[in-house]
Length: 416
Image: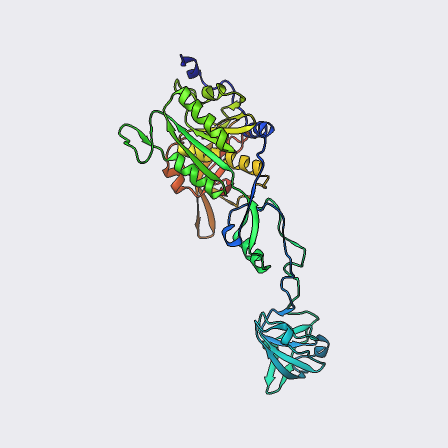
């Protein structure tokens, strides 16, 4: 019945073209929101611009330990021509600005880092540029207006955007938001991502695995989905049966925003996922196989505008396809910008060939010896060998138009 499927993929699509086609057919979901405490917002997506309601810092404060002065009093000061000022007080970090007295010409105040400047002063002389003598201080170096001062609103002025809408919240965002006195923010509710594994040979971790393969791909993908701020919904593992697969995908389409399947998308007699999808009303297969390795069986479809991305059941191929397809699709659906991955250049330690017209995602190990960065290629075609993931700390993406690299060629690697 399915023997014709063994002939191979009819047409492979370029990764970029497949993504473009997918985006053209997706109807983005209505993004809902929720209000949460700032401390709980790591990895969440801001639903609206987060705006500072106050000036940060809220007052002019010293950036160093030293002496608050009127800058014009220090003109001409040097080690050979020190200028003496009268000490009239001391200000510590945490002192209430409203209780601090003004200073007048010819006066100075001992001040510590983070402390509010007294009214009338406009600069701070660093402690090492002055000599303390009882109730006097000798200034040995002139300062310009607002030198060594963190000015009011220097970080964020009142009304300024701290975090833009549709931004992935990072630890430093949380610090900035909290500094503005904001306790709660409105974020996007996580996208629901359904994951369904298929294959008679697959066993869940808690099942009898005699003669079968433990499903390591799904837990791996679930953790990646969570790391990108989405909520995975586990639809289990089903045997190679069209009706069962169809029923599971139909159910997943009702409760999720994105559906991922693993296994059943290649060209074997029991690769039935695309057939099952075609039996669902409103379904459309967009591409079946892409010019990439590993991950050639990656396929895409929609059900009434809801995306389904079908991945290989092999873990390495699935991870590669996640970077190439799942993550960009998640960003497209929630309208977030794809973040630039950190990259590093180094010398490749052996020759690597590429297949013409195929985009290769090569797992590599980046290491440093003395002052040189070296890139060790790991297995190219072993899409099911997890050790190439545990050993890898980078991906070398070889474009379709590049035949490969020779030993000692400089290459650019995406760190993972």
